[in-house]
Length: 443
Ligand SMILES: [Zn+2]
Image (spheres, rainbow, N blue to C red):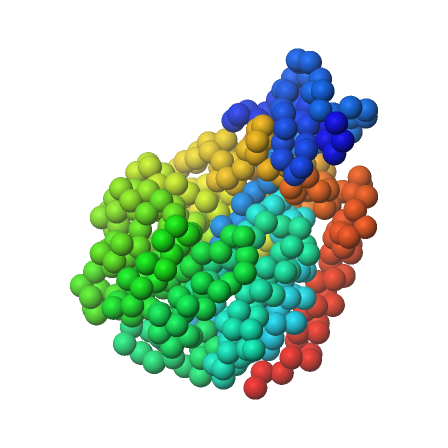
């Protein structure tokens, strides 16, 4: 049989525990077989050599919330005091500099950074739709298509959720900087979203601030059978405005309009009532926690333990990319809980790894992330999930396989991969970000 490759993983996370000498056969981008503890017959599909992979191998992490262009703000948006709302003005300035070509170049580099940080799949929450004055590009989905092409080039699995963004706040018009986000109304948004060419396309309600109540139903209907994401209760001010206008919390408003459900992801869900938690649980809505962004923006600490206790499915997102590090993101879910509760061990390390959403199992995508257990950070921290969760960082990722392609690591023989080595990746990011800050003038 051709096309199959065999690997012997020194240690690997399989079925909720770390095993040694795990044989994995990969074929057509999928895991064909997994044999823990070196036992069992060799898989006949993998003839010839077996590649030994030292270190601890984990399933690739799924990043369930990203705005690729926010990466350009890292470091630059840290001067002086401010709030979420003043940060947002800086973010709009970056947005104004981007066109489809520039966004494509930036996104390739950002998605490559994600891969090198342990993420093998990303959901891009996309709202930068039109030209700065709001006029559509010749291809009205030029920006979304630029992101889809960028992900393919980088080698990450992308789900594009195209966000409906119509208002500058509840009963407030768009500001000039927000014009390029809007299609005018939800019907026009749905028509454009429906023409995106891609394998994994969904929709989003940017927030209850940005989509008027009477248009929420149109967005929900357009997302039937598709993923639907929404920013929810990131800031107390959003809750206050929503209650004042509708007498409902954002979660309650979304529930009334049929927006919650098993294909829906509520992003942040930081400031929730008990009733909100119950609504998310009853509807089987997922919550994407983005703790490195939430702390960076001063959003607050989300109720991760309360949500988990209620049975809500949790995942992680790197959102604003102040940090792109899957390990830091899952660790922050626990360490933020400690700060808020004054109690350690609110989540087991195994449960935190589970937030990554992947599995090393037959039939699963061949997304394998290997960390070095002898780095300055991980040395002596053990060789199990505790080392991964409480010691490792993105810098300890030494090998990344996504859909069967080795995208980072010494055994990457793939000439099409620009980010096979971390030094190349840093250089590319620097070039793209320098170009954006010097050549793209905000109008
Ligand atoms: Zn976001």
